[in-house]
Amino acid sequence: MPRTPEYFERCKWVLVFSHSDCLSHATPAGHPERADRLHAVERGLADLSVTRRDCPMGDEADVLRCHPLTYLERVKAKLPDEGMAMLDGDTFLSPGSLRAAMRAVGGACAAVDAVLSGEASRAFVACRPPGHHAETAQAMGFCLFGTVAIAAKRALDHHGLSRVAIVDFDVHHGNGTQDLLWEEGRCLFASSHQMPLYPGSGSAVEKGAHGQIVNVPLREGSGGAAMRAAYQAQVFPQLEAWQPELLLISAGFDAHADDPLAGLEWQAEDFGWLTRELVQRSGGRVVSVLEGGYDLDALAKSVAAHVDALKE
Ligand SMILES: [Zn+2]
Image: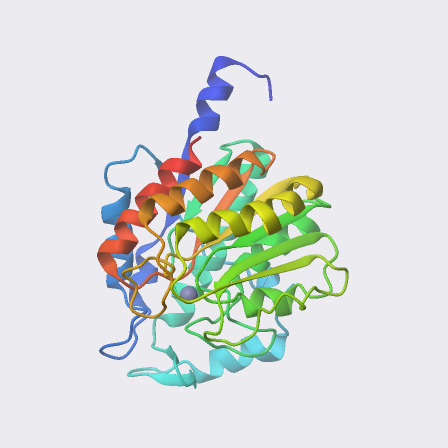
């Protein structure tokens, strides 16, 4: 694509992928992962100039790069006609859950396609359910499919990239992404997370089959200063050495001080700072995928700071 002024203008665009089907994944009353989260995300996006796209329905072939067919069939078989079914202690299926999860997969894959084709250089996928806890054949932690890992595999196997990076700043360890990409030497995976905390994995000694996984545990009660120091020491040098052709972000906002599920003390501006620093080391092409974030006001403010920083 010629480097015209229009090209650079387009590079400032952030595509936001979303779909109303993602509201129809219902969870029991009082469950933190609820449809209102997406309304909060929309409040956060309201004052930003972004370009909207509907998520296409995900392709099963993309899911099957990460999960076996038997697992996909098991999720389909458990899908209730009405009410709710349980996949694990805190992961539920309602009649609309498969459509919602497949929109998340479709949005993340379409975002990868758009960024790699040059249509835009940044994208944010505002979908639920989240994905980073889903293991190869096990739904867990509100997650059905490993959306961000599926997007990484699409970039590698469909588009032929050879160096993708994922940074996961959700307050919980991205155990599912780690499981799905443990053997994947073409994808750097870095996760920061409070430890100890659900799901319990993510110690620094877990490094992947090729040393391509970087786990950065953070202490309960630590805030933005500790996060910045940890990223500067343990993540940024690895990301710079990796020279990614595409950066994926597992963007969970539950490290915010007001979040009810965890005990880190980040503020909205910390998400903005971290996003800017990651973008600078991304090589230019960034796809961010919503994960957690359960205090609605904190989620709205943090998404605003994150997506605004994606533009830079
Ligand atoms: Zn989380």
